[in-house]
Image (cartoon, rainbow, N blue to C red; front, side):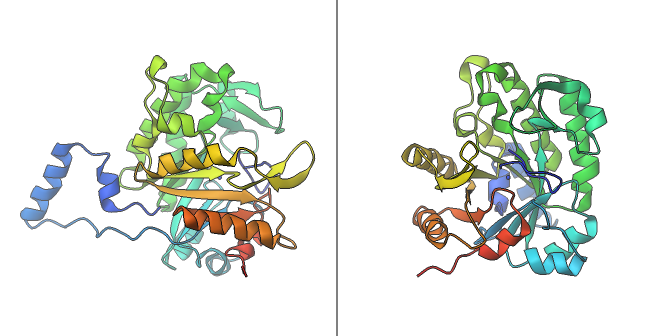
Length: 317
C-alpha cells in the first residue's frame, strides 16, 4: 500500500559495500581489486547497519524549511520519504545529519495524484477498490517498465537520495495479477541496475521476495534488494471495523520475516496503532519483539503522519 500527503492509504539499510557487491559478478569485483592495487580510489568503508529508521511519507513529514525537515528526520539513521514530494535541498539537509535517505516509489500501482500520471495512465489495470484514484499497473508491458524507470532516474534519483524504496511489488501475489509477475521481476531488476551503487528496497510480498515463481520463470526478488520492510508486523489497522488491533497470523509472518533476514539484507518492520495518545503497550511490544529478532521497528498511525515520528522510540517501562 502507499500513503501520500494528499490522501489516506494504508501502508512504505544502510547496505554495506560488500552487500552491494553481491549483485556484481566475480569479474566486476576483480576489477575493483585491480583498481585498488593500481592506486585507484578504494571503495568507501562498509557502513554500520542503521540502528533506527522512520517511514516518513505521510502528511507533514516534509513540512517547513530544509532545516526544520532535517531536525524532524535527522535523528533517525535511515528515513523513507516521498520520492516526488521531497526536494533536493531537503535531501541534502537530512543527509548532512548523517541520515540515509531512501525515496518512496510505487511500482505496482498507478496513482492519479502523481505528476507523471498522464504518462502512465494507459498502463492501468483494474482499479484498487480500497483506494480511490489508484489502479494496479500492467508491469508486463515494456512501456510501463521503461517509463517508471525513467521517472526514477530523472525525477527522483537526481535529487541525491541514497536509493529507492519500492512499494506494491506484492501486487503480483494476487491470482488475478499472475501475468504481471515476470514483468515485475524485470522491472525490479532494471531498477537495481538504475540505482547502481545506491540502495534498493521493497516491502511486503515475502513469497515473491524469497521464492519467486519458478513455474513462471520468475526469480526471487531478494537477489536485487539491499533491504526489505514488512508492514503490520504485530499490529495493524482493521479497515472493516475502523480500529487498530493486533495483527493475526503473527507466527507465520515472523517466520517469513526471519527467512528474509537470513538472506543477509536489512529488515525493518512497521506497526500501525494509535499514536495520539500513544498506545504504549502496543508500541513497546512492537519494539520488544523486533529487538528480540534483530529487526528495526517503526510505529505509526495508519496515515503515517509526521506526529508518528515522536512516538519512536516509545518510552517503555
